[in-house]
Image (cartoon, rainbow, N blue to C red; front, top):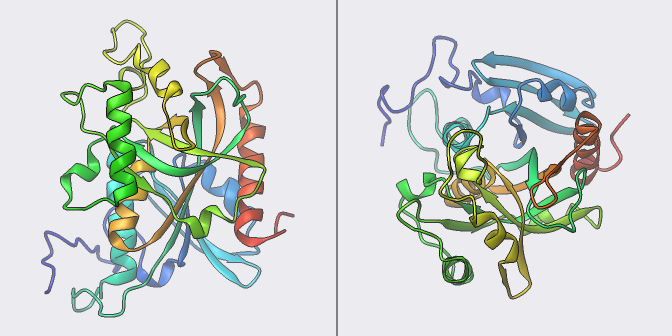
Length: 293
């Protein structure tokens, strides 16, 4: 199968369209962040930077920590951008850009989100680090792809709908488990739990400014959900799409977040920049050992 130019868009320097990265400019371990300004916050810990690319909100630095190659990439906000980023990262690894054919020997990438989020439990204060066991999606991205979920995932999502009474006319939620191999790298410093992904920041997360949200009373139900030791820890806008797409494409994915807001206590971090710096340092230590200078 040779992918036509309308489906796989390659620019005049041989890079994939949105990310503007060539296959030789990508490492197999990729840290993804939302904010383009967070890319140099991560890459300042690299021993060397070999490539710097930028196109729209997609900024990437590829380099080395010790003997290990690593890419850090910004995606902007939201699951729609994750759909672009994960598909294009997979294409860079697993499609031959000369023949436009899918390779017979597929690579498994390690994709790790370093993000910010809001806690949905009163006992998870601001500045806490969270590592996601699952991504629970309200965003619908994975509903556009053919997929099957494991028996455990189906049990969790069915129990979630039953306990919360979620209105499936708004969205049909889905859930995917993250990589246990990557999760095990993040120890006791990280709270573990289910991360909910919303397709927006205000109404979809129950926030109200001038418009009334249909989900404003739903936040309490999320915090009360419990099934066989699983509970929902936090709310953000990317993890479920990362987990789902990576699972379908055969990659390892994990999401770590620092809590900058507690929705139950209605508090916001007074030192959010320092909290993000700490999350980056602890995240890199989990991935690469004691590398932070």
